[in-house]
Every structure is written in structure tokens, then in C-alpha cells.
Amino acid sequence: MKVLNTKDIKLDKANMLILGESGNGKTTLLGTLPGKTIIISMEKGLLSLQNKSVDYVEVEGDNVQQKVGWLRGVLGEIAKSDYDCVGIDSLTDIAECLVDYAKEEYPADAQTMKMWGFYSTLMNRFIKTCRDLDKTVVFTSLVKTTQDDIGRRFKLPAIAGSIAEKGLAHFDFVLNLMIIEKDGEKKRVILTNSQDGMICKDRSGHLDTYERPDLGLIMEKINGAN
Image (cartoon, rainbow, N blue to C red; front, side):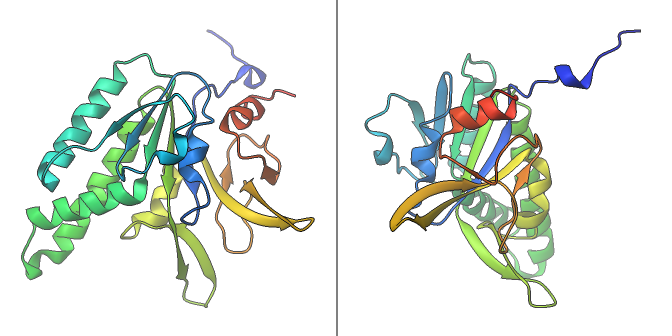
């Protein structure tokens, strides 16, 4: 019998979701990932990383069928690669692509329920495939505001369907990239604990409520580095 100790657990690979409003710097944040990184760009908006040296691939295909096929192929190649980290920019665009794919599979109005069920299956399968890459995987996503039955407002990933909320269970970390004003200056920070309707998750328990927008530093803290 091999006895292990929880103090020896290291989360050297993580599955993260970075939420943020447009223009807050989510794509720029991917440039701070440690190690050898590749970015899957679904929105072709990597100009903010021009001063970095980060490998990337851009979505290919003239129609949604080709784009989904390309995405499957890329994930297969990355799984066999020596990349340490994968950035997916963004989950919002992935969701839009998969909704269109599901609509082509179930185009009739009478098939709406089947279409949304198929889409949810595709999204869950995609996130799980990325999670199982044995690499640090960081998704970016825009946010949307939703309201529950008693009027409470929450910010969730800007993706279609109930998976916007249920899909959060797949991630080790759900972090919000925000711009706050401090001492008369606007600063970018990462919120790690849920507050004011913003849903966050820190499975490590090592992160402060606000962290600098540096994923390399965050990975060090996750593993208990001082």
C-alpha cells in the first residue's frame, strides 16, 4: 500500500476560466502564462500580444463544419505536443461556433430542444477534452449579467444556454479580470473570490482576494510559493 500525503500535492497544471468585460485585457493576460505557450485564437484579436513571443493558431474554415473539424484536429495535435500551457481565446466564440453547428444538425423549429441539448453536450465535451490535455489550459470569456428568481444579479460567462452556469463546475479556477480605481488611477486586477454578483473560484485557497494580472505569479501562488 502506497501512502501519500496531501501536503505533497502540487497543482502544476490548472484549468482556468478568465472572465472580463471587453477591453479589460483578457487576451493580454494570456501572454503572462509561464512556460511554452500556444494560443488558440477564435476571434483573431491578438494584436495586444505583438510585443510578446507566443505561438498561436487561428481558426480556419469557410463554414461552421470546417471550423469545428479544424478545432478537433488542433486539440489532437496540441495533446501530443510539448506545450506547457494552452490559451483559448475565447470560450464565447467557441460557444457561438457550436451553437451554429448544432443548428445545422437540428434546423427545424420542432427540434429546438434537441438542438440545445446537442449544443450543451458539445460544449461539455469540448471543455472536458481541454481539461484532459495534461497541460495548463486558460479560457477567456466575455461576461453577461443574469438575474435569478428573486432578483439577484450575477455575472456569468457570455455563452448561450444553461452551461453558462453549470459549466463553471468544470474549472479549478474562475477568475475575474477587472479594472478598478485606486489612488486616482485605474488598475487591472484579478478578483479571485465571489463578490458583488461576480462568481469566482479558487480551488487552491492560496490566492488573495485581489491579485496582480500575472498568470505566472498566480501559478506560483497556487503551488504555495512565498
